Image (spheres, rainbow, N blue to C red):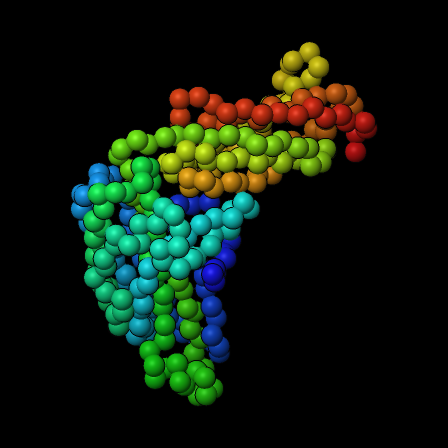
Length: 276
């Protein structure tokens, strides 16, 4: 199975790639909005949405739209996968209005998306994505390849993710599966976390450094991050404080809030032998 892996930036939807073709001069580009299509649907229900593709550059462009699955690796990188290869893919439910369109400078086009949820759907959330890519028009592409033009064309691709939030037997569950100290002064804590339920989660939290008496020496926030059902994440939390941790024994306590009925917690002890 082939997969294109791209670094995930932290937002729900993002421009996933840029390719500089050649030369110097004018740029052609595009915008896509909205980049989030979310649906709350029961089995056998139908939902519809749309996004707008706009040519924001000075030259005519061809735009392609293709359906894919996606996943994130444990370091947060985005993988673009063939449609229908993920267990919770909704790619097979999706119909979209166009797979290609040519846009002159300043023009825009609407891409309509319809989803029909099957009766025997697995409980919980499902997802897919539409990859929207800009391409030079055929004549310009040939000129670029032959070196007959001095223009630069930046080719941009956007990942418009589709999320279908299940409405039956949904389960928000998560677990911290490991906490390790990756370094001290600056303090670095490696946390492994897993979405063990069947819902897309947004998780945030806190790391507290406590002394042997249980007093909190300092606290470090963990910014919100998303996970899909079954997804595991490896996080490295670094204490940005300029004040070094004194010699002694400590305990790092990690508390994460994933929006469920409980918080998940993990921790580890560590020793600072000397101030670096």
